[in-house]
Every structure is written in structure tokens, then in C-alpha cells.
Amino acid sequence: MEYLSMDPVTKELTLNTGDIPKPDGNDVLIRVAYSGICGTDLHILDGSFPAKSDGPLILGHEFVGIIESVGNNVTAFKIGEKVAVNPNNGCNNCDFCHRGKYHFCKKGGLNSTLGIFRNGGWTTHAIVPDNQVHLIPDGVELHQVVLAEPLSCIAHGWNLINPVHVGSKVLVLGAGIIGLLWTCMMHLHGLRKTVTVSEPQEKRRLAVAKLDLNYNAMSPTEIKDNFDLVVDCSGSGPAMESAAKLLRHGGCLCIFGAANPNATLTLRPFEIFMKELKVIGVNINLFSFPKALQLVQAMADRYLHYDSLGIRIYKLAEYRQALQDLRNGEISKAVFRC
Image (tube, rainbow, N blue to C red; front, top):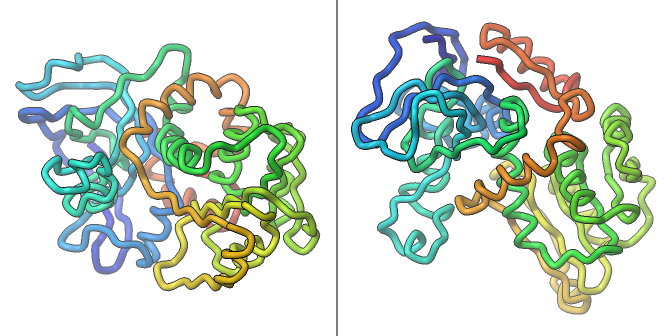
């Protein structure tokens, strides 16, 4: 097998080869087909996001593939089935898990995520617990399903901010891949001419136009309107502060983008009080992954085209080029064909 290994100290990646592992018990061995590079992966490589620190790590929490073998206790899956992986799990013993909030679990949740604290999908072969494996629905391509993980997070955010009524004025901050997927989600749910995207880079504003959603993409300095909902996909504290001032009475600021842990946000409590504003944070969520697979099925034909989304495919051996293109803004997202 081939895999990309991250050194826990230097954060450097190396392409290695090794023996294909064998699944035990409730584990499944997946021949990885596609694995995405997420903004979180970049933060981990920069040392600004927590990850496994006691040994080498295979990054990649967005991946799909075909089952190659299963452990002795696995009964729900068969060799040859196409599957997607939910990287998150819970311990099922703590108070958070008992209340159905697995994403806050101190042992599970982000603390045991595949590709962050356990080996993930930047590899040709991955071992995954069977309770984190999902069959891929009919009518979609494997490379499209690699977007299920980010869509599962967006689905969780959509649940938290709803109801969002048709005609609501919405501002999306940032036109990276997450901002683009958020706009697709809104278009799917009937928001047609009332969504504006705030993006300082002209190239990214053109990417919004390429989706053909009839949404306005504007420089932040050009936006003077007021909005019912602001969804931040930038992780930028200053961008959130500026946008919060544009909220109408009863408006909502949804913080979706992962900011630097040391970033700060200044809001005026009196304005929140007078305007009855809401601030909602969105983390991961285990229960939204099946919904995300349904979203992939519903969005595949109209929205999930790599060319219009600015996604490019690379080999594992091309990881340096993939990371460079992503950091330089040449693409919105990189996906490994493993």
C-alpha cells in the first residue's frame, strides 16, 4: 500500500509504502478510491489545529472507496461494496453521548476523528470501524461522494439555522469550496435571488458565477445591504465582525468556518440585545452523514461538478503540487485519486 505520513513534530509529509493491513473484529478494509484535502488538513499541517501528536499520522477525513475485506464480526457489509466513511464517532458511555451529542464526546468526537487523531484516507488502503461505514446510494459517482463529509457538516449547520424562509436575505462570507457548497445548499432549498456572497478575491467571485446560481458575488467593501442571515465560511474574525453589523433585527450569525483557536470576535452586547440577534456555532455531527449521502444524490446532477466547483484531482505522489495549488488559490479543493 501507499500512504502519506505526517511527522507529528515537523508536520512534514512523506510518501511511504507498506504492507496492506488486515481488518479484525468489527473493522473493514477499504480500498480508497478518492480522498479530499480539507481546510482543516491545511491547519493541521500549519500546526494551528489539534491532531495526533504521539506518532506519525495519515491525514484525510473525507474519503470513499470499495470494501476489500472485513473483520470476523462484520455482517452488514460485503466485499466489493462501494462505501463512504464518516470520520467521526463517540464513546457511547459519556453524558454527551447519552444525550445524543456525540460530536462533543471527550473520547470520541473530534478527539478520535479518522484523519485527525486516527489514521485516515490519504492512502490506498484504510482500516475503518464498520459503524463508520455507509453504503453509497445509486446514481452517484465515487468522486462526488467524497464531498459527503463536508456536506454532512453543512447539513448540520442547515438544521441549526432553520427555519430559513424563501425570500430571506442571506450573506455568505467566503467563496472557497465550503462557501460554494453552502450556496448550492441554499439554491437547492429554494433561495434563488436573495443570496449574496462576500469574497475579496476576484478569482473566487468568478467561481460563484460559474455555478450559474444567479447569486451576486461582491467584494466586502461593496456590500451595503442588510441581511437576515450571515453564514461565515471564512474563519476570519474581522469579516464576521463587519458582517454582524449588517444583520437585520432578529438576524442570525452562523459561524461555520474554522477560525484560528487564538482568533477573537468583538460584538456589542447592547446591539445583540436590542436587535435580538443570534450567534450559532457549527461543529461536526454524526447524525447528519446519512442525510449528506441523500444530499449528494439530490445534488449530483445539478451542483456537484468538479469543473464548476473548481476541484482538481491529483495522485498521492503529487501531494506537494496539490497543497501548493490549494494554498495559492489555483483551485477550490484538491482530491486524491488513490
